[in-house]
Length: 287
Image (tube, rainbow, N blue to C red; front, side, top):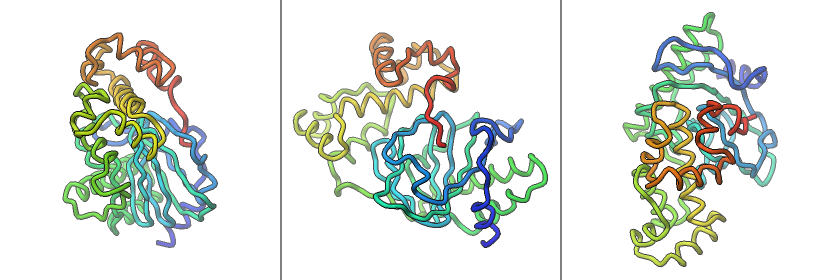
């Protein structure tokens, strides 16, 4: 463990956070970069971050709140969390906290099977720590890619077995917000409006609006729009669907309404986003 701590403490920031060790294998993380954070002050607190890459975060020492997709999650010491592309998130702390956090940033061609890890902290086991140590001393890129795949697969299996300790902090038991989040994320392809949400929950639209403003500080309409558009960004970045298909896949009944929402959230039209391959126009680096 001392070797692992020493490596993380002395980890230099990469020259380019968006380009690193690559792989020829479809199921393997590629363009890996490694970096660490040793104090909560190194994060830009309360400033939303959006990036198009995966970030696998390991908390080796210290706990910190992460506000992600308008949920509040505590990543405890000894846990890992996979931050997905285009997830709105920021790190929060009222005071400076000493940390030992290690990040693996990467791209991934095949993403199926990882949804179980979304917003779900997973306890890091001894096997993963051994893999991390071996990754730090690996002599070639093949070994680095292989070890990163093993780590990711091991975390995914742990989450699927539901043998992990969850640290997600619920706002209230069966609260309106948590019920909305559960309903929305159950099927992101379904059409969604605030009136439909209020009807589904059996409450008035005004009550729904007041609860959202009170608890997370934004309207339910804005919440729905951002969730849908972040989902759309991840689809367009992969490039398998065109704009019309993406709009339908995200529950929009017309390309016009989809394009209007897309531009409101990102500042760009879907065609501009797709043409620029997403990477140069819609990102705030994790840096």
